[in-house]
Amino acid sequence: MDENDRTRDFKAVRKAATKLSLLTDDVRSAMLLDMARAFELNSSRIIKANVEDMEAAAHSGVQDALLHRLKLDEAKLAGAIEGVKAVAGLPCPVGRVRERRLLDEGLVLEKVSYPIGVIGMIFEARPDALIQIVSLAIKSANGIILKGGREAHRTNAALVEVIRETLDGAPFLMLLSSHEDVDAMLKMEGDVDLIIPRGSNAFVRHVMDNTHIPVMGHADGICSIYVDRSADIDLAVKVIVDSKVQYPAACNAVETVLVHEAVAARLLPRLKSSLDAYGVMIHADDRSRALMADDALVTSAVEDDFHTEYLSLQMALKVVDSLDEAIEHIASHGSHHTDAIITSDDLARRRFFDEVDSADVFCNCSTRFADGFRFGLGAEVGISTSKMHARGPVGLDGLTTTKWLLEGHGQIVADYSGRDARRFIHEDLPL
Image 1 (cartoon, rainbow, N blue to C red):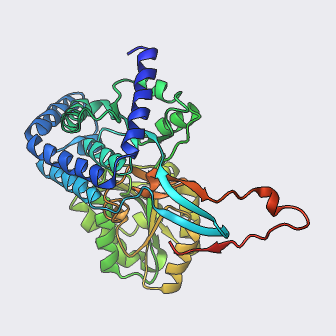
Image 2: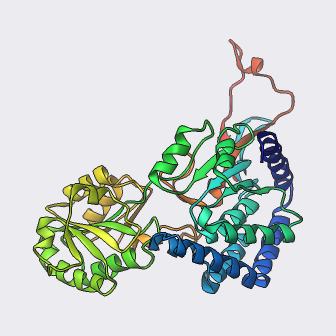
Image 3: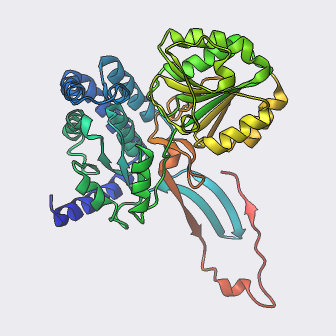
């Protein structure tokens, strides 16, 4: 595809996105239900494409973490389809009045939610993410330009083919196929309104450094769990194991566990025994290593281990002297994604909630709950660690912006200036 063709296609997506935004929510929701049914009817075709992707990826020697993300079997596809149906049933995010204010008699101001426009989504080799992203884009009336990981290109192509066959060509949807296409998209300021990259730290930084388009997302998912001195040991073991092994390739899997020295001797042998059942490699500091059986699944931690997003059955472990030390460690080593405390002390919980500066801060539960579907958002386009616009799992609300609508009857600013100026009422009205 040459530069002129790319530019024409990007502009076509923008034009189609405007038309999508003029449809009613009922029509867009019906489109999603049609899409869900089409995925069900074409499941064998989609899974066949994924098997081919999996075989090619395994043959090329990709890491297990990527293979886990790449896999789209019958159960995973069924779950993604249920997600589409859930999004269809969510309240419409567009046209929602967020503020209403009487400025003066006959002069009413409203702040109303509105689609962002065209979103460029660059995501890892995880085809179920494509299903989530497209469903959220349709429900929020946004055009979407997609670039998935090359390992999933057959699966992504099959999914997009099904969508286009079902939704009259889906002109608001574009699937990119090359790095040159991505580089071109990054230059389409004015036609692309938001870039959401999902991938390695280096890749996200590359995107941020090579575009003037706003970028939303996170570079790393270095999630930590701190086990406080008042923690229930049984609860701590259960939560840590789930956070690490339930889906280790996810960005919300725990990568670092910090343990208060007062409970380390009771917790660590039991924790290691539970993690051993899954083959988890522990990168342990000297104090924690001394409290566990020293075998092939324990190694001495170095500083870099506490800055590492493993995305596999590995984790870093450290004994700390206090809640203060744990909070400081998370601030200096974490990525502001998802961090949790295990405690029965309400003061410790409140301090952790107040002082840990992350998008998601949990108490006594798995970090794996940091997910748009589990939060009741229907699905997500990703998790943002940005402090602008949207933070945490980004669902429908995160794909809308706002506009101010002011309706009057001939009012002019001159009447509100000078010695005899009219006074504003500024009365907030019910929504």
